[in-house]
Length: 507
Image: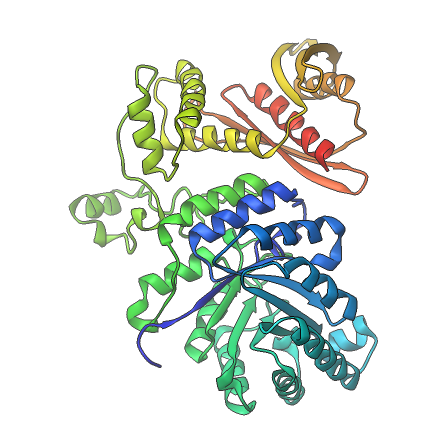
């Protein structure tokens, strides 16, 4: 292996990541994530599965038009109409790719497809050939390759390479293999299938046994040159390989792996935060690379070592993933210059108009808190982004609650209807204050909706911490996530509910 061979990073957050149970992204949210993935400098963005729904087709098509630089891929089953839909969505991309897949293990061929190996082989070859008529860049994935008979896997890959596939992806679809086992499987494919030196070998690992990143890195040592995964490890069931972990493992152990990526690692934290904010999936505090505790030291021995030399207990520089070490204190006395400087440290470039708007919201927050820290500013920016990406018909004006241990909670809500420019109010009682708030909102916004989840998380430490409310709403076939933040958790709960309702109106 030559030094510093490039590993291509294939991001499937917008396709496999969105398949995480409970995630439902709007078109504008997908486009915003795609722009951030471009800033991260990933090589390939799998924008979606166009044949799955008209909404996904439109999202993929818009991403293909807007995002220049990365290859834009669309997923397709080995069904002719899927291939046509995939091409229809990505045909305007600067660099398009059609990603074709089919079940390859006997357990899936027999039980899911109700076919035989010969059928699968013929379908795969036919659809790769069909895709090749539209597009030069074709990726083929034999699904459940880690449980597929090796002789059939060789046969299937050889035939699809001959049919025109330029990338062969070996998925550990159910997260079944051990790293040493997966490494050997990749080596065997590369060494036993003709013309593998003329295509890119890729892997797509799931995390059912917690081994997705380990298997991805093992595949690199076997010769794989494309790694597929999701930001924050999102994806079906237990998720996919967490790309931020794969990327920083390569970056940190370049001496051992002798490979590198073209990733702008200083965009990692910002990308992780955006994906978490939009999907409503929080990052666990002890999550590698991007967790809140990833660079925090509680043990006295560790603290002593880090104070003397960071390298004693830190193998990565926090600034390498975009975490600012700026200790400038912000308060209600801080001016625009101090706020602008801190936001720039956090990676936010604002126009004068945007800064003015942010400064107003910052002052409101600073009036409630003695000090405003980085996490507070990130929540502030997230709130503004949510407002920008949603064409909000309704806006929360005020929340008033009467509640107590011996009093039925009652909520009075005032909402502005931006379509009519009128402020409307409603009062309702409930089993608790949040129930009362949501019933009052329902009186003003007439949408039949099911609340599947409500939760509050403290963004920062301390009694004056911002509470981040997250709700999951369902209406007909639409599932959305609403979020809202405030130092008052009842206000944040109202904001989150209205945010979700606004998204349902758009959908």
